[in-house]
Image (cartoon, rainbow, N blue to C red; front, side, top):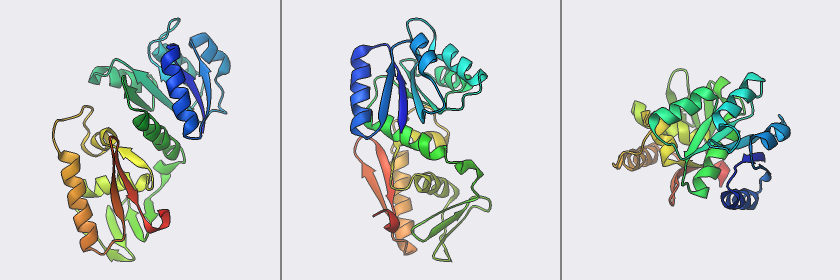
Length: 226
């Protein structure tokens, strides 16, 4: 992806730029809002935007971009990670956010998710892969034509993993999308449901692996992804 990083901390900007480039992304850096205004174009696949810039609020800059019609996905970096702060960022036009300090693996996973989301996935009525077909309208899952019985929450969990099959989905993303949590509860909720989902898929003969990605989350690996 071609990414614009807007970050005024030179040390953090260097770390993030190195991490993005090691992952194969073309990265351009703006150190403040004025530089970002001059550099932004729809040729970027994503923008990583610091919320607190020296010359302008990152949220005000984001509102300007959206008002000008730019639809480039924006991932907000913020030290303000309360629920109200997250909601404010989303209402300003952010597509996702990462709280500081953050792990580079999570930042990369969220950028990959934004890229996939941008492929007009919302218009899809079903997801397919490795013999699995999930009908998003009727909430029906089949494997090679045979029904696979899952509880609604297990089905939502599989939906998120299937949307990004072959890529890591963070624990925080699953908590947000499947359970509606905007914080990290100190429970094994995700782990328990992943374990049940693995068992039910295996019982139905589904050839798939749900891998734990250390310090990140989980990845669904299907035969076609191997």
